[in-house]
Length: 123
Length: 287
Length: 175
Image 1 (cartoon, one colour):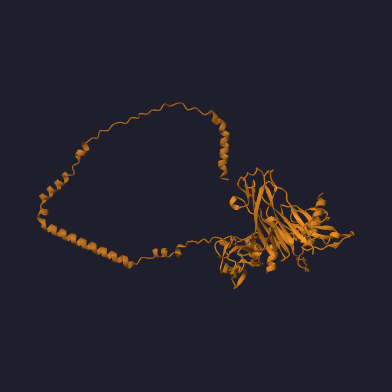
Image 2 (cartoon, chains in turn brown, blue, green; image 1 turned 90 degrees about the horizontal axis):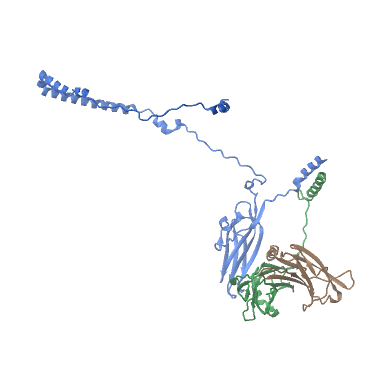
């Protein structure tokens, strides 16, 4: 009953949402030698946001070098984007978090905006 | 070539058609007027006729309590067949009171199945700003007569007014009025009136007879009769009225009008054609 | 031209009729997976009120509006929510003096009574601007973020005229 309630809550969430999966990604061996990769997925339900910045961090939240097709991805409203993240094999064990941060455009009103950031963790 | 193609299009068109008579939405706050409510249109703000199904309930309230107190809140709706359609209990015992919002999903349930709704509490505490919304799906064509576009819709027959023809022969009042009067009633009255008249006549005769006997000598006297007649005639002398003259007069006409010569209207000759038209129009009504 | 249009229509309808099931002739599977996820939603966008020349605030009593962020998680103990009130303007006119930032993050509403202990179990970071909530229960949690900005460092200087925007940061970090 509880789980069914939860699913309904998620399905009926408001239209201003941002999510990234999987929660616990895993590094895979890529075609390129000494490079590992993982695949992430972003779904954008925020009508006021179209761009998301990707970042890879260690335990102390220091950035780790990585490569994606674009570091700032365009994710249109109500669309899902899959992207690959490539990292040097030597940094594989240091990488702790991979995050997506909404990029906000300035506006001319006095409204505090909400920046959303979702981080998945490597186990 | 084109004709077969058109036929093919017409043949396939029904397979690609969609029909959807559902509308979805939320009711108003059922707990607006209190913590118990009936599933009626004035409270929910939605129709409760056939075709209205409930697919979920969203409720929201603020629990006000102390951490150490035991307190439970139950949101529920009775089932008209007994028991409850749904019953959700929040146990706040040993917890901080705060605002909660929950969604209770359910299978599409006809609203006619819902009985009284309520928010029940037990223990020490209270709730504030309660809100209970019902998520609905309305099937506009479950009763095909709701909409003329529904499949199975039967156009209603027009109501023919019943005209009652008045039959005077069946009217009891007319019957009573035209009944023959009982002859015994009016014969009796006639007899009574005749008898009364006879009695009066007898009295008059008696009076005359008695009057005649008292004045017998006077009546027999011729001279006294003549003087009586003369006195009576004097009152009828109207000669003075024939001689009297009433002065009259002559009332002469005081107003005179100067005449003139009336000349023929030359324009009348021009309007002769219009007369023909007028004649035609008049004749039209007889055709 | 007409023939071309008609042919296109015929092909489209043919495809449509083939795709439309006339009746259930076979069992059709719908596959999917349920995985843990965290979703950050903006439930209510905030608005700064200007009760006096040197203060911008989201307090409703001062014609402001408190932003509310909702965080949904489908798996217990998988994520922690990190909510921060603003500590700087993301856009504003040129400011020559200091701006003092205060604010508060609190749990406004939950989808389960078991989450009532979230506020008590939360910790602060980033000088108190960020509050961290371990999401130990699956469900939805609403967080209210109030923010007050005062100009002049205690001398109550008037804000220069113009548009001011600040950012509330809501993070969902896997544990």
